[in-house]
Length: 104
Image 1 (tube, rainbow, N blue to C red):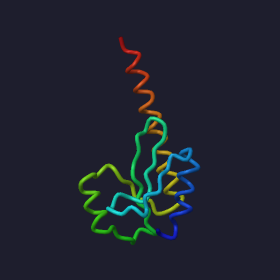
Image 2 (image 1 turned 135 degrees about the vertical axis):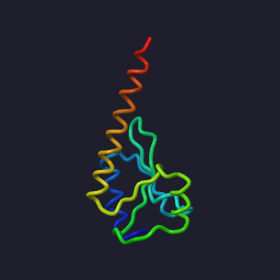
Image 3 (image 1 turned 45 degrees about the horizontal axis):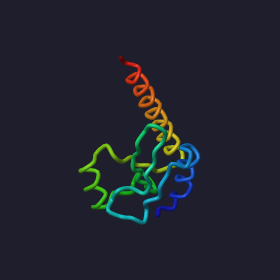
Image 4 (image 1 turned 180 degrees about the vertical axis):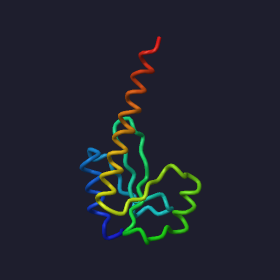
């Protein structure tokens, strides 16, 4: 775990209603956390200590195979912005679902 892992994870837990799974011990380059919220199905979060921290070979392979499945997070402020984005995505998906069900 990176030194900033716990405070960043705490932000995700607080802002996403505890819809957070810590995967940091799993490996395979899939990210340190899996987070979801409401209608948003989820995304992997790769926590890095700073902008200079490089991806591992496994992380590069995973990102190449699944380019939209992971976001990088280096700070609590960045975690807040990612959470806001996730909440907007969840809201947009929920609204689209309501509109779709209302169609004859």
